[in-house]
Length: 117
Image (cartoon, rainbow, N blue to C red):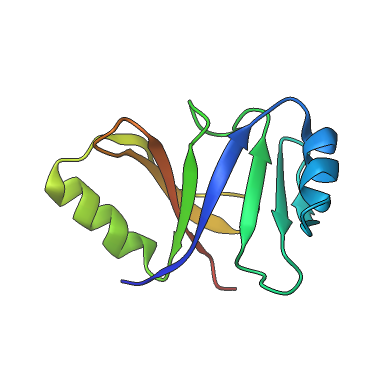
């Protein structure tokens, strides 16, 4: 399993203001579902920030997202380790398969892979 990208998640009700603020640092909006917006650097597209008002399908808003090439393997590894699964592995309507896990410091991590068509 390989990590493809790591992205901080900012919990905020000020999405537009955040987009404008991070735009001053070169980020552009690349996805907006109303409750989650992703900003990325045009020159380094894996440099991203997500701004979330509240997670639409999970019980908590994560602190970070990690995209992996094999979310099934990541889920199996976390379960085998005894880590707390906060949100079970599932397919989401926006094209990702994901789960949430709590890290040793208490942070909630959204682990995901994009589904292939």
